[in-house]
Length: 233
Image 1 (cartoon, helix red, strand yellow):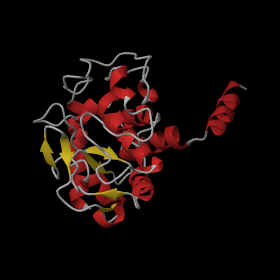
Image 2 (cartoon, one colour; image 1 turned 60 degrees about the vertical axis):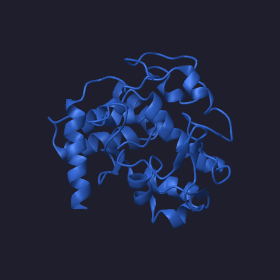
Image 3 (cartoon, rainbow, N blue to C red; image 1 turned 90 degrees about the horizontal axis):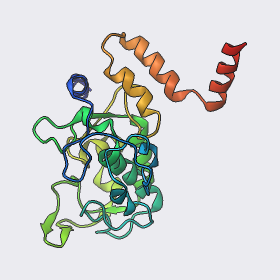
């Protein structure tokens, strides 16, 4: 728990100091801009770091390849599992928020993005019966001119990882860390653009930030409408 807190704090201060820009990848934009032709990752269409062609291969089930990386080395993933893979791929490729956690030594990579426990638990539940042969999806492969290949046997996700926390903090190397806060974290949905204000804001107390971030994330659309109507009266 202490280690996770230290990592989260380190990621927090890195996030505050990082510039608003896209990760420095050859196929990313230099800065976010609208992208109306996205085939997938539609929540980033108003401000996207990726071009439409990068999302075309994510738009159909089953997805065979993502960024020259094959997802089907142990057979096709279930659609529910693949949906979580897409959310993470969309965040990495397209989100204008991702550069807040650019790796200090690898500007094309992520480091210590605070991710919600609920997202990790749901991801683990969705994928637990699917097969995987790599614990660390960056390094646990045999790589050749034809792409990535298994060097270990295929086993279910729930045998490779102990739980959602283990999955989130192991699969993408050091890209993600599970946040101890249910609000000061990202869940790869449209609410992230609201929550990030409080993740990056040093002027508010933690308690105040928690309250405000939770309100933005957890308030139901109907509740919000009723609240707005009450303010108008």
